[in-house]
Structure formats: C-alpha cells, structure tokens
Amino acid sequence: MKLGKHIWSLAGGVATAAVLASGVAQGANLPKTMIWTSYDFGSAGFAQASGVANAFKKKFGTRIRIVPSGTGIGRMLPVTQRKAHYGFLATETFFAAEGTYDFAVQQWGPQNLRIVLAPPTDTGLTVPKGSKYADGHNLKGIRLGYVKGNPSVNVKTDALLAFAGLTRADITPVWFGGYGVMKGARLTGKIDGFLMSPFSGITRELEASPDGIEWVQFDPADKAGWDRIKKIAPMYSPSAADSGAGMEKGKPVNIVEFRYPMMVTYADRSEAEVYEITKAMDEAFDMYKNVNATMPNWNIKKSGKTPADVAWHPGSVKYLKEKGVWSADDEKWNQARAARQDKVIEEWNNAMDAYNDMRAAEREKGNKIKAGKGWVEYWMAHRKKVGIEDRKSTRLNSSHTQHLV
Image (cartoon, rainbow, N blue to C red):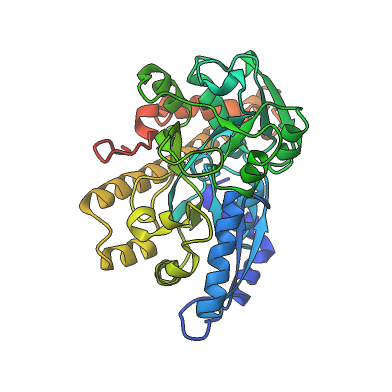
C-alpha cells in the first residue's frame, strides 16, 4: 500500500467535516470554525492552545474546539483523519514524520507533516524535593512514569536515562493510559517522577504539594552524557532555566530545551489558509502572550525560526519571509528537512513493495506470511540498509551549521 493512498484511506468519510468548517470568518480570511488537538487537560500544551483559541475568538470571531489527548496517537489521529485542522503537538511530530515507534506499523507509516509555528520551551524530570534522584547521574532505581501510545514522552524519558548510561532495565518504569493521570501517581508516591513542563498546571500543583518538586539536573558540561541523550532524542539541547514551577529567579537549573507545542498540519493543507493562520497567530500575539510564562516564545521571531521536528509549511514560510523573520539559513535547513521527509516516504513505499514481493514469493513456496507480520522489523532493517537511520542525518540541534541531509 502506497503512503499517499493510505493517508486518504484514513481520512475516509470525514474529509467533509473539514470542508464544512472552511467558511470565512468575519473580518479575516480564516475558517469560521476549527478543531485543534493538544495534550490533555492540565498540560502546558492545552493551556497554550486554549489561550490562542480564546484570542482568535475575540479578535477574529473564529470558534475553535480543542480536542485534548494524553497520547501521541490520540493527538495525531484526528489531524490525519482531517477531523482536526491543526495539532498542537509534541515530538510525536518527529516520530510520525519518520514512521518510527508507534508510527512504524503499516496502519501509519511516515506522515507528510509541516509546521506552522514552533516555539522553544523547556522540559525535564521532576522528583520530590530533596530526592536523591535530583542528580541526572544518579537515576538508577528511580520509578518513572511512562504513557502507553505516547512515544513523545517515553522516548525522551529514555533519552534522559541515557545521560547516565542507563536504560529502562536499570529503573522501574510504571505505565499509564494517559499523561495527566501520572500526577495522581506522583502525589500518592507510586512513582518518583515523570517528564513535564515547568509551565504546566500539573507541575504547579505538584510544586504546591507537601513533597514539592525538584528538577533533575543534566550538566551541560557532560558532553558524553549529552551525546547519549541526542542519539535517542536529537531534538533535545541543554537549557539553563530559572522561570517556572520549582525554580528560583537567578538560580537556573540545568534541564532541556526543545520545540513544544508545535502547531502542525499536513503538507497538502492550503497554502493560502496556512498563510492566514500564521498571520493571525502573529496579529493576535498580544492577546495571548501572557497566558503563561512560556507564551512569549510564540513571537514569530522565536517560533518562526528553524530547526524543529519537521519542515515548515509553505504558507507559513511565505508570511515569515514577508515579516523579515525567515533567513537564508532557515530556507536551507527547511529544504533539506523537506527533502528528507520525501526520502523517508519514498523508502517506506519501496520497503512496502519489497515486503509484499517477499510475502508473495513465500506463498509460492507454501509458506503463508500473515499481512503485517514482522513488518516493523523489516522496515527498521530497510531504514538502516538505505542509510536513513543514521542519527547524523536526523539530528535536530540548535545550530544552523548542521543540516538534515
């Protein structure tokens, strides 16, 4: 099954919903109504998506429904099905574009996604105040929360374990059905910590709890440790943060920076619409910039700059160029990242054809292989064979001197 056909088969009979919502709002070339997805209630992503949605309603009269989900699949699926126009997504964007982790199965595969805007933000692990696990070199034995169907959380948590040369085998992973429920587990002492944002409502609640919070520190001077982190989570880079829950101004903690939440849609969404959405995000900025401490990062001078998990949408690029934000380095990075996405999609289709040929050949020998059996392993082996699994080619760091090629 070719990828393009697969995307539209997922859309099925729901594309009509997007068409019905494509009317123009009064006074702005925006849809009258939109649906966005985000992380679940209490998260920084939900707060930011809601803040922008409220600003859009006040300034442009556009009504936006936020559909929250605690899993990467849950946030991606409505966007893929065209039930949702945009997703305020985390690193599931990267995994979906690459067709890896939960998106490596035949029902998914690499998705041709594009960014509208992508603000930088901080994240990290918190533990109870005074915990022995507050040093990133000393995480052996820690009980950490993981979320089923959410590689964005799980893989990045694994990356932070790798800072100390650890894997899940060295700790106690505790699995949950959604992100938000981990708060209760932490409050009741069932886990020691989990990945979170300094600016989310959940983090503020834990900060105010009897045990408080302390950020696990990842020393930026430990090059070997950071190299291990980036082999697993290439979107991560060191951050010294002093604003947010559990932090004190002037006394920064060494945690992690990446892009979140990224406003994401598919590459085939109308360039004209995405241009207007980007413009509206910029024009309404003053109305939502104070929703929480990280909202100022939606300023297009920050959120309109590469790199991020996937390439920027042409509609967004058009507006950013008009505003003088988009540079030659941004364009070079973007073209390389888009070319990589095209290559990954091409190789997915090549691998699928070869896999089906293999199954047909085995059938002729009398060996029936059930559709999908062994596919993920086959796809991972193909990625290595054709050279798209090389971490150097997928690294998303903060420097424009390294590009995705």
